[in-house]
Length: 227
Image 1 (cartoon, one colour):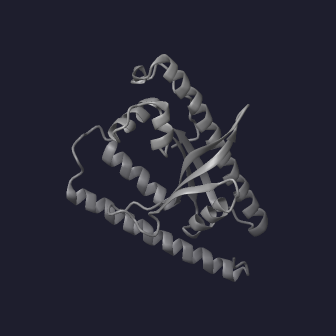
Image 2: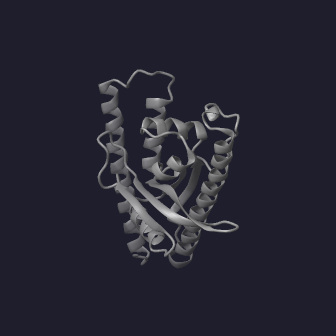
Image 3: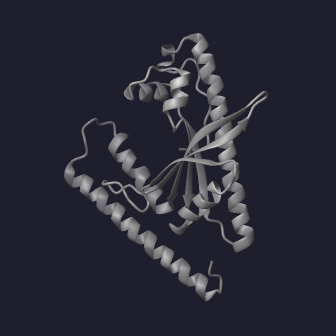
């Protein structure tokens, strides 16, 4: 993910799968998803600023975002057994708009999620806690799918956004693991012994996360700043 998410062009590979009218509707819908990303990002930035004022600490290290491309949307819809069209995109896909929040410590994950979900106009659709219950491969993160209102010229739309909340260590592992497995230009699966080494790296980084959290908490106690 990154914070640049240009609207897909009608010349994108696989865009011919949409009729011209359907492509126009898709591009309009993508603009709405872009607005939803801005809504969520602004809310998170405001929460981070509020936390800094109250506790002299920023839980968010940085925020990334991405807008799924139309070829990727078509590919995923077909993989799920849906005809590629705008209505199915809105109904079946929760990750067209994505925001990734990188936090400093693992206690920040739940704090930030709770503060965001406490807002009246943010509705939780789905929560998957791979932070407390890691995937078998070692992947750790807190995933939320939320809906947020986007106000258009003549209507209010509820738009879904997928939010991934990770520590710096979790993001390091997830980014490199994804690159090693899927971006190495090789379609062959990663051998079992190397998969185990990747899992071991996730475990080590989890231990680092725990240790850094402990050190941070102890320093807060020494400074009389227990939260």
